Image (tube, rainbow, N blue to C red):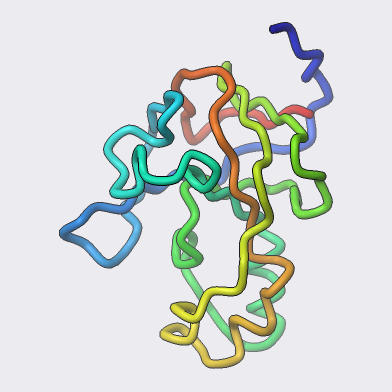
Length: 148
Protein backbone atom coordinates (compact mmCIF):
# COMPACT_ATOMS: atom_id res chain seq x y z
CA UNK A 1 0.00 0.00 0.00
CA UNK A 2 1.54 3.24 -1.11
CA UNK A 3 -0.19 6.42 -0.02
CA UNK A 4 0.85 9.83 -1.30
CA UNK A 5 0.62 11.46 2.09
CA UNK A 6 3.11 14.24 1.47
CA UNK A 7 1.19 17.45 2.18
CA UNK A 8 2.51 18.83 5.47
CA UNK A 9 -0.42 20.17 7.52
CA UNK A 10 0.82 20.35 11.08
CA UNK A 11 2.76 18.79 13.90
CA UNK A 12 2.25 16.73 17.03
CA UNK A 13 1.87 18.85 20.18
CA UNK A 14 1.42 16.04 22.68
CA UNK A 15 1.04 12.30 23.14
CA UNK A 16 -0.89 10.51 25.89
CA UNK A 17 -1.93 7.09 27.13
CA UNK A 18 -4.54 6.00 29.64
CA UNK A 19 -3.86 3.31 32.18
CA UNK A 20 -6.23 1.29 34.32
CA UNK A 21 -4.75 2.79 37.48
CA UNK A 22 -4.92 6.48 36.54
CA UNK A 23 -7.99 8.55 35.68
CA UNK A 24 -5.89 11.10 33.80
CA UNK A 25 -3.98 10.80 30.56
CA UNK A 26 -0.26 10.29 31.06
CA UNK A 27 2.00 12.39 28.80
CA UNK A 28 4.45 10.44 26.63
CA UNK A 29 7.41 11.45 24.48
CA UNK A 30 6.81 8.46 22.21
CA UNK A 31 3.92 6.08 21.59
CA UNK A 32 3.97 2.78 19.74
CA UNK A 33 1.03 1.88 17.53
CA UNK A 34 0.08 -1.40 15.92
CA UNK A 35 -3.11 -2.80 14.38
CA UNK A 36 -4.71 -2.92 17.86
CA UNK A 37 -4.09 0.75 18.71
CA UNK A 38 -1.71 2.42 21.16
CA UNK A 39 0.47 -0.18 22.89
CA UNK A 40 0.14 0.19 26.68
CA UNK A 41 -3.11 2.18 26.55
CA UNK A 42 -6.07 0.83 28.52
CA UNK A 43 -8.17 0.89 25.32
CA UNK A 44 -5.62 -1.21 23.40
CA UNK A 45 -7.33 -3.99 21.38
CA UNK A 46 -10.83 -3.02 22.63
CA UNK A 47 -12.54 -1.38 19.62
CA UNK A 48 -10.29 -1.03 16.59
CA UNK A 49 -12.42 1.76 15.09
CA UNK A 50 -12.06 3.79 18.30
CA UNK A 51 -8.53 2.80 19.29
CA UNK A 52 -6.85 6.19 18.79
CA UNK A 53 -8.33 9.59 19.58
CA UNK A 54 -6.82 12.58 17.79
CA UNK A 55 -7.70 16.07 18.98
CA UNK A 56 -6.77 19.49 17.70
CA UNK A 57 -5.45 22.47 19.58
CA UNK A 58 -8.57 24.17 18.16
CA UNK A 59 -10.73 22.29 20.70
CA UNK A 60 -8.69 23.70 23.56
CA UNK A 61 -8.82 27.20 22.07
CA UNK A 62 -12.61 26.93 21.66
CA UNK A 63 -12.94 25.90 25.31
CA UNK A 64 -10.60 28.68 26.39
CA UNK A 65 -12.75 31.21 24.50
CA UNK A 66 -15.53 30.21 26.90
CA UNK A 67 -13.23 30.56 29.95
CA UNK A 68 -12.73 26.80 30.23
CA UNK A 69 -9.02 26.19 30.74
CA UNK A 70 -7.67 22.68 30.27
CA UNK A 71 -4.31 20.99 29.98
CA UNK A 72 -3.56 18.95 26.85
CA UNK A 73 -4.80 15.40 27.34
CA UNK A 74 -7.91 16.33 29.29
CA UNK A 75 -10.14 15.64 26.28
CA UNK A 76 -9.00 12.03 26.42
CA UNK A 77 -6.89 12.17 23.29
CA UNK A 78 -3.89 10.03 22.51
CA UNK A 79 -2.54 12.58 20.05
CA UNK A 80 -3.00 16.35 19.98
CA UNK A 81 -1.99 18.17 16.82
CA UNK A 82 -1.97 21.76 15.61
CA UNK A 83 -4.11 20.85 12.59
CA UNK A 84 -7.88 20.51 12.72
CA UNK A 85 -8.82 17.04 11.39
CA UNK A 86 -12.53 17.40 12.14
CA UNK A 87 -13.44 18.14 8.53
CA UNK A 88 -11.76 14.97 7.25
CA UNK A 89 -14.15 12.33 5.98
CA UNK A 90 -14.28 8.82 7.38
CA UNK A 91 -11.69 6.79 5.48
CA UNK A 92 -9.28 9.71 5.09
CA UNK A 93 -5.69 8.87 5.85
CA UNK A 94 -3.11 10.87 7.73
CA UNK A 95 0.56 10.15 8.25
CA UNK A 96 2.42 10.99 11.44
CA UNK A 97 6.08 9.97 11.36
CA UNK A 98 5.96 6.66 9.50
CA UNK A 99 2.59 5.69 10.99
CA UNK A 100 -0.45 5.83 8.73
CA UNK A 101 -3.83 6.26 10.39
CA UNK A 102 -7.30 6.10 8.87
CA UNK A 103 -10.11 8.25 10.24
CA UNK A 104 -12.75 5.76 11.38
CA UNK A 105 -15.34 8.09 12.94
CA UNK A 106 -15.85 11.46 14.52
CA UNK A 107 -15.85 11.56 18.28
CA UNK A 108 -19.28 11.43 19.82
CA UNK A 109 -20.65 13.56 22.63
CA UNK A 110 -19.12 12.45 25.92
CA UNK A 111 -20.81 13.05 29.27
CA UNK A 112 -17.51 12.57 31.09
CA UNK A 113 -16.49 16.03 29.89
CA UNK A 114 -18.98 17.49 32.39
CA UNK A 115 -16.39 16.70 35.08
CA UNK A 116 -14.30 19.51 33.57
CA UNK A 117 -17.19 21.91 32.91
CA UNK A 118 -20.92 21.32 32.40
CA UNK A 119 -20.86 23.40 29.18
CA UNK A 120 -18.05 21.40 27.60
CA UNK A 121 -19.96 18.47 26.01
CA UNK A 122 -22.32 20.76 24.13
CA UNK A 123 -19.54 23.20 23.22
CA UNK A 124 -17.32 20.47 21.76
CA UNK A 125 -20.02 18.18 20.35
CA UNK A 126 -18.53 18.48 16.83
CA UNK A 127 -15.04 19.53 17.85
CA UNK A 128 -13.66 17.06 20.37
CA UNK A 129 -11.70 14.85 18.03
CA UNK A 130 -11.64 12.02 15.54
CA UNK A 131 -11.08 8.34 16.08
CA UNK A 132 -8.57 6.55 13.90
CA UNK A 133 -7.34 3.04 13.30
CA UNK A 134 -3.82 2.01 12.36
CA UNK A 135 -3.10 1.24 8.70
CA UNK A 136 0.70 1.16 9.08
CA UNK A 137 2.26 0.45 12.48
CA UNK A 138 5.18 2.29 14.03
CA UNK A 139 6.05 4.90 16.60
CA UNK A 140 5.02 8.53 16.89
CA UNK A 141 7.13 11.05 18.75
CA UNK A 142 6.13 14.40 20.13
CA UNK A 143 8.12 16.15 17.41
CA UNK A 144 6.58 14.40 14.38
CA UNK A 145 5.00 16.19 11.44
CA UNK A 146 1.42 15.48 10.29
CA UNK A 147 0.79 14.85 6.59
CA UNK A 148 -2.32 14.41 4.43
